[in-house]
Length: 358
Picture 1 (cartoon, rainbow, N blue to C red):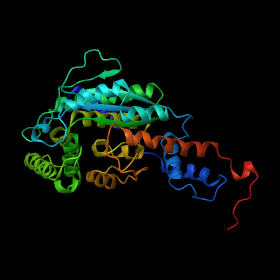
Picture 2 (picture 1 turned 180 degrees about the vertical axis):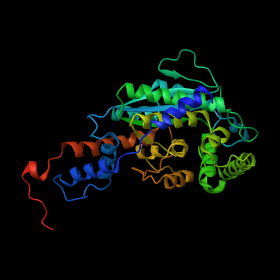
Picture 3 (picture 1 turned 135 degrees about the horizontal axis):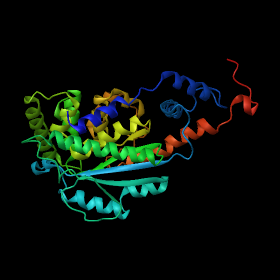
Picture 4 (picture 1 turned 120 degrees about the vertical axis):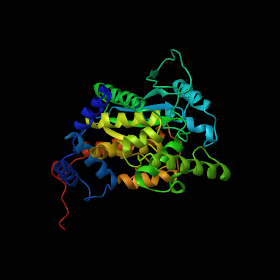
């Protein structure tokens, strides 16, 4: 067993299931607030989940952060994206300059942005603000060989875990996990099909906006990738699925989610690619599910399948398919509102308000 494998195993062992009794305590508090029982709907469910995973209401204001993991994909050589690979590099520069959608949303909602190069097929030099954890310059073409070696998968996952440790040390209590990587919807489609046993055509969407012909080609490529992967008898083991058909940024996001759960940090998954990483993390450590919230429902068809697979109810449904962590950050004010209601509303007793008689 390698040192990296031992580190991952140790983190997994530290991930504890949330005590159902803690949720009952939270629901008791929610039912005592000056409102009809259950009248705040999903907000009550969110508040109870966050109370239970920490054993107390998080401090307010919550300390929020989004990590954007960037990497390139060898599968782009097969024409699965409407944009060239160099857009990954260009968008990372845009994140660092503060000009992307995620930057705008993060500024609006007080969320710290961290941009991580885990596998971009370019060099950034000493670009200020960039977290350099590059494992290699892009994954391999998974149509012809595994996307990464076991050592590369471990390195990317360990990088994500280390950043989760840093987030915990910085006092982060609400963590969004996003990505940037041209070609990564093809990787997420393959992961989804492998983990849920759904056909490629059901889980493969248009990604960056492919036309009909290009979409059909993408489906055929994902089908061929899955056939190759399954022929190697690696069809369902989550970490082997990740190694064979994933991406370096997806591996790093998986590691961050495992690490965050081990520190009892609430994790807001973004769209399709982020939720594919969550599915791998839950396959490795089912208790991760207790720490997950789905920020939104993406337009990608595979995302709905993953949400059902993980029994996650998305907070928002706005027809978005951008990535970057945008949907997760946009959901953060809703999550923090749920906690403020829990912590700051008066109870019937404290306010001197009569409760319902029936």
